[in-house]
Length: 220
Image (tube, rainbow, N blue to C red; front, top):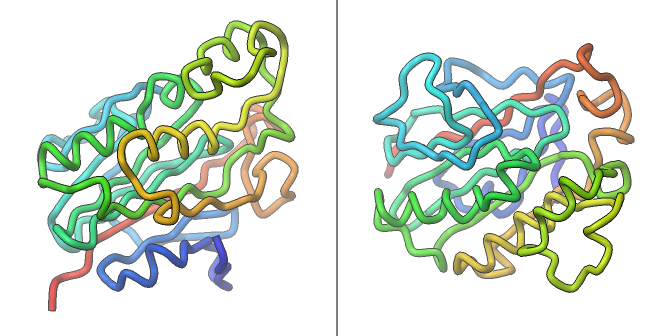
């Protein structure tokens, strides 16, 4: 992810160059413009269309084809994933913690875009924002073993080890049919990246939350 703006947001060049959506991966200093549709995130693999949204709905991803509908997810080490279909003009925002990632939430989001908006995986653009990196994400075997589908080459998932959540999600997106060159990753760690990020692993219950937002622009 190549651009950092002075308002405290990270931007994906892939999404920005499409010209059909506005987006922001928030940081501790960012204040993306509201209002937006926000979910009660429960570390699931559930992704819903925006038409089903209501205050307090439990899900970890939301999608729309309606312009100016701002979709938001909040994170503090988990991975914010923004998806964009510039052809059929649809978008999704996804919160992927380890449970959602292990359950294939990225594939579920691609599937929903296809079922609901006729999006084709080969048209989709995906950006994964700042999140805890493999450097800092040490987990026990009870977590690591759940990533065998995404890291079949590893022989250390039955013990305490480090997991790269963004790489797991990237592999899901490729398995779902996205082109590798259509996936943008922010190679920064929220845990050791300093005060510009909130981090649950670093700060515990005192950690704040960062909001990542995407909204389709009106056509024409």
